[in-house]
Image (cartoon, rainbow, N blue to C red; front, top):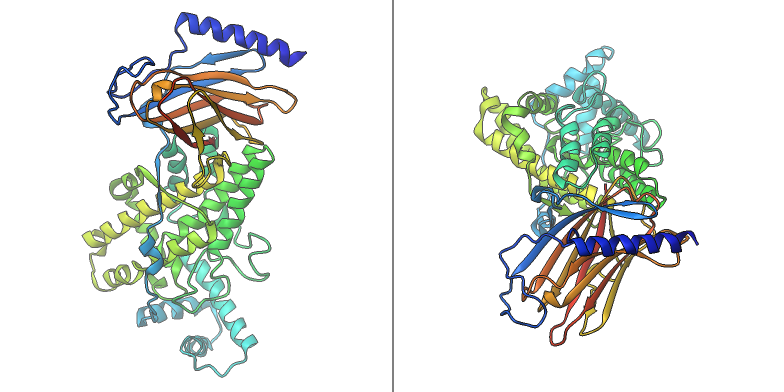
Length: 483
């Protein structure tokens, strides 16, 4: 009875809004708005519309103002294929690197020279120690390296705030659909991984520290190396699981934790064990101290990388980032004025921009839910006088959601389009008409619909009715992003 009364009240409200004209969607494009009847030529134009809806359960829908264009979901692009074809380049520690290692050993007893020689023999494959003895030596070096390159208190680097704080928060701001509360969560947890080096449990072997790295292909890993991609995936998958259990607050906490690891892999010093580590701390502190003047605007990107496998994509990203280690170290070794070196600045701006794209991609991977009818290469046909459907079920709702709807049709003025929603206990969907035979002869339609306060809704439906003959098409995407 409850849902029947609610549906009747909702229907009456929708009729009233239609009569008053307040529900007619705004259209942003230079296309002729022909009515059905095929009076205009097909000009191949794409219409791009954005609405904002708020549902106050269970009886009413409030139409909010049109959202500004700069808040639209950004464009996703594939990770460049040539990143996977970068040849592994074996870099050997320089004398500067070994001098750095020697400095690390100052707190050791008088045999620190022997310790250094032992480490060098292990790296050069000339050690006569047992595997267990080598492991003990390298474990000790790994601890010293983390303390030296990540700061005395192993505080957040890249470098703190700004750095991880900025990368993570800007990802939420750039994407536009993430609520301010959840964007703050991404920022607040951006440094968590640096003060929890033993995490994630099950990924980090007991007795080691997580170095947030990937050096497997081109270097001699220390204990705690090569855990970065798997640590990233651990928390990104935990976030997806939280969304599936309708707990978006916990999801954004896990997402905030996971983003740190992909951001670290954008720094080339996280792609080596010993090579270049003499410059690791100086480099990150230089980036942090010059962030506002040189690097902050490099995070103003308008695309993100599409993530399909968090750990594998993180490894690919590390391989790309690693290319910059040698040229950066060469500049820092031989240019006394390296802090103003234009090549170093340009390299770093590239690294910052690409890291931001990967960070945003991880957010999208975690927060995006797609209709199985339109996921991947699938689509739903739209045929004359028929009704077509796409569904997204079991979605964790939050304070903010963004729907994207992509439709290819040779005459979009033929179409009526409805967005529907349903609580678990309801038998039928409540609906809101988001397209009403507008657009004339345009043949592509991109709808972006924002939804607020749909906390009790679990299932969503897109219903498309083709009201005229002679032109057909398909629903190519129906997806939502949880903010």
